Length: 115
Image 1: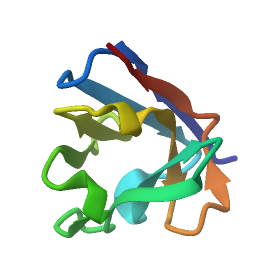
Image 2: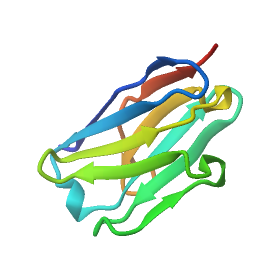
Image 3: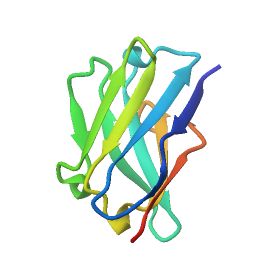
């Protein structure tokens, strides 16, 4: 059974950083593309970043603008998203997904950026 569990969210001031983790079980992350999406009440679900199965292609939404970095640790079977220079508009629930379609997604971790 596929299981994804995000962690690392929290309250941070504008300009701050967080590292989100997504611990996976029931499959091997290095065999699949993985992605991060986020959701806010006003904007709905928004794609953030994805990493291909080989781990050598990283793609980001335009609004990231070099602030976020996706990575994974194969030994820990964990996906990460480093969030730097956070802005108030980055406030959202962040979800990791197996693959890119959202068929399998974790429960999410809340990121709140506030002064």
